[in-house]
Image 1 (cartoon, protein in one colour):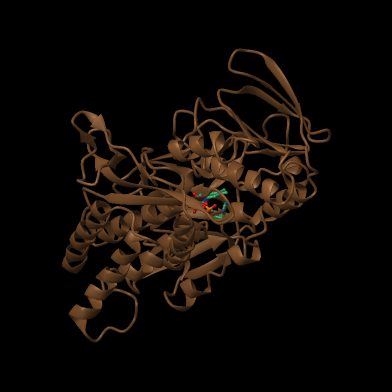
Image 2 (tube, helix red, strand yellow):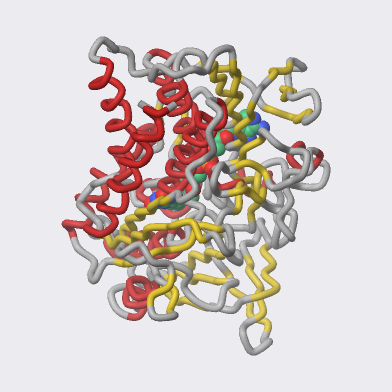
Length: 473
Ligand SMILES: Cc1cc2nc3c(=O)[nH]c(=O)nc-3n(C[C@H](O)[C@H](O)[C@H](O)COP(=O)(O)OP(=O)(O)OC[C@H]3O[C@@H](n4cnc5c(N)ncnc54)[C@H](O)[C@@H]3O)c2cc1C
């Protein structure tokens, strides 16, 4: 136990040190935490060669649901920090993980879906995570079991839910439309490939329409990044008279505002038309006619060639009758997200003790992003290990987020922020590099790149590789 507390203290200092240093090329700051923590164990015990810590935990079971950015990280670090006495079962239906991060670069042909797929085998082989192929369809809080679609159930002492997001039927569209005619492609996979194919068929002069839902949504800069990548691709493939029309339900650009406003009014001004404050979107999936109400109440009609509706999303299972909803865990005011205590990511629902929700499905004050999901998973894993050894979760968690956005096929910008626990609101909030949430009465904000560059693009590749290695290997 003592070992863990000492390591925890080191990790927090290291994290803030990185924050003070700003964004370092390709660095995933928290990745170093885990390794150092493990190193601490190895150095102190000298004889330990396994990547698993030696702890007092015996005979405990954690079930992790969803092996995406959050779930894979949680499973790995629960084993690494909890040790052999902590059995971790990871439930996931898909054989491989397909990253959404970098999937916008599939649209211009510079990456492939196959190149964004990751095996989870190392989690089993190196860390002893038990994998269970399946889909969770129920949570029984009193029996402490999860039910799977195949009729089996798994018992747990603690449960970590990391199922990501599902997409509403919206704007007159259905899930079948997303899969076959009007892909949202907001989860990397077959829809990304379909959208790529549709863009490939566009002729000069035709229109690509994309929509952005009201925040919070997955990856705040992602839609604006997609607009830039598609515009750049159309221009550089001889289709510079095409238009990319961005219909945003928000009042303005939601992340990296300087970067994207500069790109929309400068570099990509001849192709991108950005329209904020849009309401009443309706899409005909057959004709690709899009109608919407503009900021002054006028109804507008666009005849598009390709429509990419990034529709409103929510925690998987939070829809009426869904498994998360039936367990009462979708307890945000709008019923879309799981509210959590950000010291442990345990649900705030009374009677749901021992159930933790991480990644995009939860609401914690930080953006819905893969880098953040990785961080939440580690805070959660640390808290579970502490709780299982009779201690309390870290009272001052710190997390960081880095996001790179390609603006063309070979240039990018970035956004980074350090988040700190605010005990008044009990949420994670952006801190400045000195670790303060408020500076002279003004809320600290995330930092974005001063300019778009090829160097940033190179760093982006390193950052992604490092993040995925820390998550899945
Ligand atoms: C175009 C795009 C670009 C992005 N770029 C970035 C970026 O640059 N940086 C960044 O940090 N983030 C980025 N993101 C966001 C990032 O991909 C997500 O925030 C991240 O994947 C969330 O992780 P998660 O684990 O919550 O969900 P996911 O990664 O989606 O994983 C959820 C997993 O749960 C599984 N699952 C679902 N339901 C069940 C169930 N009932 N039972 C069992 N398993 C289940 C799913 O199969 C899936 O494997 C981007 C997203 C998009 C769409």
